Image (cartoon, rainbow, N blue to C red):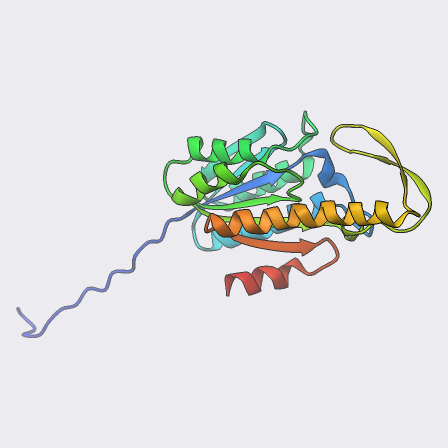
Amino acid sequence: ARYNEPFVKVFEEERELTMMLLIDVSASETFGSQTTYKRNILVEIAATLAFSAIQNNDKVGLMLFTDQIELYIPPQKGRMHVLRIIRELIEFKPQNKKTNISIALKSLSNMIKKRAIAFVMSDFMDDDYERSLKIVAQRHDVTGIRIYDKRETELPNVGLIQAQDAESGKLVWLNSALKSTRQAYRKQYLDRVEYFDKTFKLSGAGRISTQVEESYVKKLLSYFK
């Protein structure tokens, strides 16, 4: 009234989001045929996402899972909190070896009631998580990040070899010289990828697939754009 002109206040909305990182720490993540293990790439991606969250003053939480929940850190803000998450990612030793993605998704629904951004990071060597994903994706913004190794896509012709399932410990002899054996190996991989893509697409969730040797940074930037 004194200045005889409008006095305008501009408010900037404080955007407080919650990011949840669901990380598969089962035994299959310790596989690597090239220069590093799948788990190392998972740690790098998780750290990248966590630091990007604190730049926006968002909360970050962590869930490490196998066929059960191995560790849960509730979402909080701050650099020290993110450093604790990264330390756990690097040093944590899981008690179990198998994978159950459905348990992780169900636990997310039970623990986080407010809408969150959830990244599920795994090699997705599992099935029967479609129903759990549909339920979670209705409440949360979910993205699956699938990490895989080149050697998991095709079996080389190297004759008779003994292979071990990292999660069950079962040993089996494979004759890789047989075309039928290599085709069956390839089909198993493709079936798993198809289930991952189809399940996330039908649930309205995002998905990223990246090979251990690829630049995950380019994949993330492309996805977020």
